[in-house]
Image 1: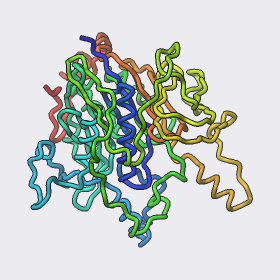
Image 2: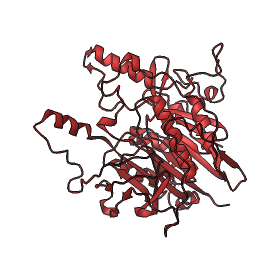
Image 3: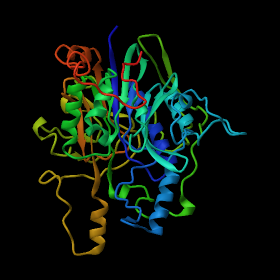
Image 4: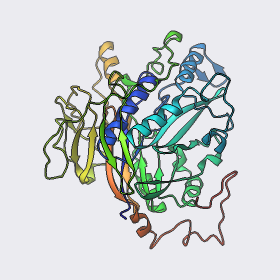
Length: 458
């Protein structure tokens, strides 16, 4: 049986409220389902928000009241998954923790909503989020299966537990995956990376907030070391699109505390049948919910074997320029659910929202800041247009080759990078390198991680 799956990363950015971001996540997952995606990775802290540019009023030895108010808004934006501050591990996964009297579940319902979206679309979701437990916040990643619900959760080792580095196994369309996530700068920690290699991962997930030029070489190194596929998703966002609480425009009365509930099924997206006979009927929620895509129109095929290009055109750039030049695009109206072939034969799947996108032309100096004006109003406008995160999402093959991306300074809600891959390439790569096996010299070197079994999971 072929060991092929379609993988995708979403270069999405956090919206004004957690409720709106959850709705956007649903829209993106539905779009991914339309494109035949099996597994989809979202960026670090996508739900809850990455507090980029915030200082929370903190200086050495001092805290301001304004900073405490900003942290309060951040705390309200975080999601409650019903776990304990120390992390309950399998007891949380298996729902063995006590539920409060009169409640149907622990937490605020975010876990249940993500399970609903995964089940509805048939897409395995890996979601970066900010989790609150007790009085603390944790940078986490959730693994959500369409059939089994939440299979596990990572908490960043600062301040979480190293025991959450445990890899999980699942079977998707007949392909056995051993997957695990390292969050952002955890990927710069060689021993942490090796703890994942030791568990024989064939899918290495790297949700991040790092948009520096050094990130892509790091992802390629990890893929080459691990002989695994590497997915990395980052947010691409301008200052003006940061959540209001980050920009100091929130108040106690506007703090977002609610979570969306599942709406009644109202339409049916084409059913997908896997090689193992499993069918995924994709029934989206009510069309009244915000940011829901429309059913894609039937469009003619082109020589790439995919739907004809979207009116949003991505100009080709040479491989040598890929790391330094942002993709240039020109504007037009968009129809729902378009695919656009771009360099290296990977695809951009654009969501169905109708919009007009302003033209961008930074080719002369892509990292130059906008021209400085003497007008304070103009300066503020130019500052709002500044990219505070440049993206850089990518998909890397088991020998370190770049299969898709990186996307620099392409900001579009729910933007997908998709790639069809063969997981037998991971085993082919072990012919000459297995850093946790034949090449490990385990007679001379040994790694131990508190609370973590480094043997490959069954």
